[in-house]
Length: 110
Length: 122
Image (cartoon, rainbow over all chains, first blue to last red; front, side, top):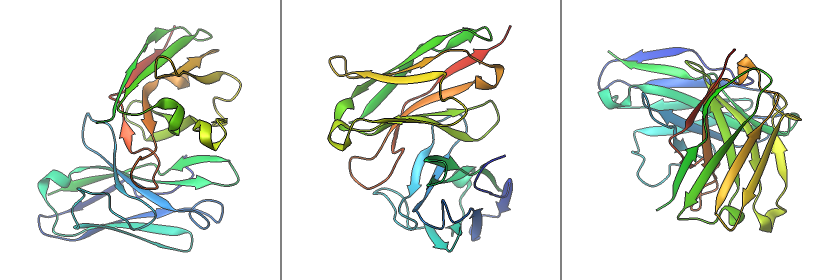
């Protein structure tokens, strides 16, 4: 059971916009930044969004992040086949004094 | 270019030990915040522990499931991070990734190694 809650799956067709949610609590998302990672099959995760809504250099602006209260979301617009991957949210948890991840969302591009 | 290369994974019996290594290049392990993150087969990511940079105190933190059994250390002369795993349990079976905070933006887990598989089974 992950501390942060994500839907196990999401899907969309090419060109569509999809969102992935991440729900936490006051000790993690409610008081700290949220980060998003993309893990393509058989590879290590890649940083996608940092500090709730910032994109590292090289990440397409099709990807965006937002946070409100104790929840966060990752949005992907103009969905492409290469976006098919697992997506994870993460945040520091003040009560646990450690990093916590969501259980991951498997995105399928139909 | 930052590169992290893990090694040391393999098969261990319950109650046994293994030591993982993470050889770094392109950064100094003493000047970086470095973590171990693991991923059980078909499961999600789980933070194991971290070693803060020397300038930020050089302290070490562990996740509750591994505290008291796992030890993170580093050898600055070899620019290498280690994860000593004792009293292994079957639930420790996972791919173990070495990862470091970004050198460019305020973000954890920016650079990742390729991972090394640890299997705990009798």
